[in-house]
Figure: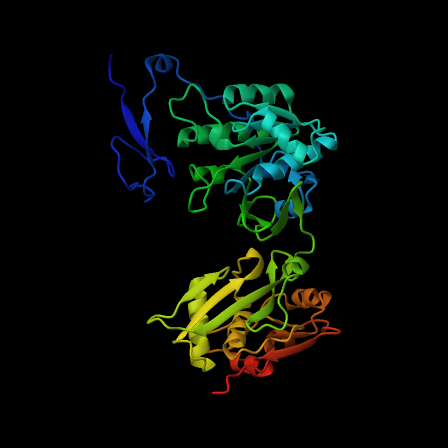
Length: 461
């Protein structure tokens, strides 16, 4: 019997080589080459034939009718916010996240809601049995739903059921478990994932069925499988959050139907995922008032203003190199701002350990959080608290100057709604604020030292 030939294929980019290598020459990823056996002679005699395209004709752009974009509510306002208003007809949506983060739970809730609204929903699971899905539905109070459940991972059978049932919405859990029996590679390989996604994409575009694809993630947090998968779909969503925290964050990294800057917040409960409507109040509900090292900042996640608590702990260091521990903030940005505080505000940070945390598991990326971070560090350094009714925002430059920020009016309105009466902000932004701020005192500053003086955080020596 002849020995089967094999090759090695990169799981990240699809590069093929006849021998194994630790590093992929194409994309530079390590330990991603997997062995693929050649197809047996029976399969080679009957090669798999890919189906034809959509059959659409080429037309001038002016003759194409657009119509109105119809958004179907998913039953989860936070999910609709991230999607751009709801589920679009014929959309191919990829949902990624760590195992156990709540992807299947959220989509099962969405499917049950859509089925209750009279939509035909098909839930395809390649990982769980029908009994397991029913048990989870009992926990979510959705056991009486008319949603159709199919436990299958062979693409031939799934494709036949899609044509037979003609659902309005479909959930595939997960795309890495789907495979073509005619193809020699294993489920989850580059060729299998690419082929399965192309079939779902063709079905979504030709029939108008909106399809959710659940995707696994790697240790680095990126979607497992070929990167081409993210280019094929219309929307890429990521579930973020720690299993030890009750909140889950849903972000869009790609959205052909809306903004990618929106953020959805969910709370994991015993009865499933619950949307958090008032995020600012929730994130500040357990804030320690009267404690040093705490400063409230109003950030923008897309169109939503959110108040978060930035915490800093500065202590005497007994090591040759002071410790810097950061959670929820860019580490390089923290090092830069600590250097600015030492040079421009006379804080002796060379012999101090600094621990930085953004409460609630949030990740702050916008420069407007610089001033609040600096005030939290100064508050912990001098051991004097920032007043509880003050909110701080502004970008800090290397010269210690406080630069202007965008959409100050929306930030001020959110602070006012939650009872903050004093706002420390850049002087230039406060000067150009339209309509003023009724009931709120704006304190404009030009430098970090001025901000520390306003809050009485200047060191005595």
